[in-house]
Length: 311
Image 1: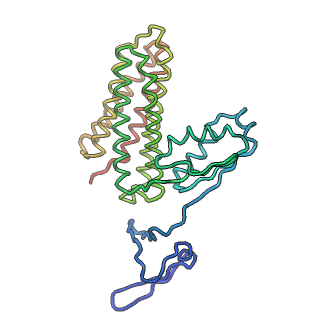
Image 2: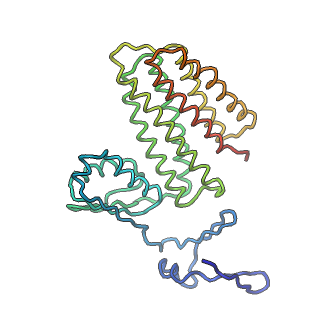
Image 3: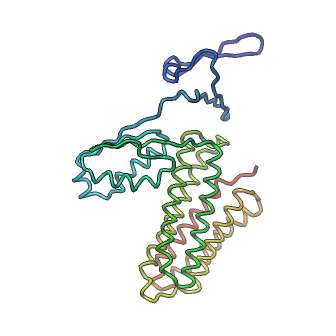
């Protein structure tokens, strides 16, 4: 909608607020509102007056659905709406088994709880405020947890302690919880530098992909723990290089250095051309899945560099 700017006095400009928005928020004359500047955009918030942003998700023929389709297809729709920033989700279903799955899925929704449920429905609602400072805190925890996951999985593979890998896969679930929260925050409020919101959102998605690849390694090699498999030194070197690349990006994100960024990009080409491709040609077949996941992580880390910028 468009509004005409009205001149008031010598230096002041005013505009009228939409009547529908005033009615929805319940604001009154003389009341203070929050105005935030995001580049050329002004965001006007009536704090404490907004109605919860609600959505209803209906699951029909749930019994047939659960029999023929993976459960994560349904729950992906919940994840999407959580990330989009809905404050309240009402789910209706005709099979009580759905409720058990919803309770399991809640671990991925930071700040959400079941506030009401009945025989064929439940309501999820955001019960915790999420100030802007929380985004930076959770984003840093996402980085540190991912680095820890990579380091510990590398150490387990190097020592041939494949039984440790199955427990490390739990860290990927925590990563999903953090990245879901960060994406939700970006959709609700944007990044502190509003122009970089889309770039940071893409970066967080890549961090989730890297954790998925690491989880894939843990799943694959965890199943080999009783087969006496020993990973070659050349593949272990590639693994170590991948871990170091992730640590380098983390350091650059919080303390930018153009020379080190150039080194990171050059390092990516080195480990792809001189390590990964040669490994595909020379290493035993049993290591191909591991090499593939490592290569995927390196490519994702390379694209992470798009989020790096001089302060």
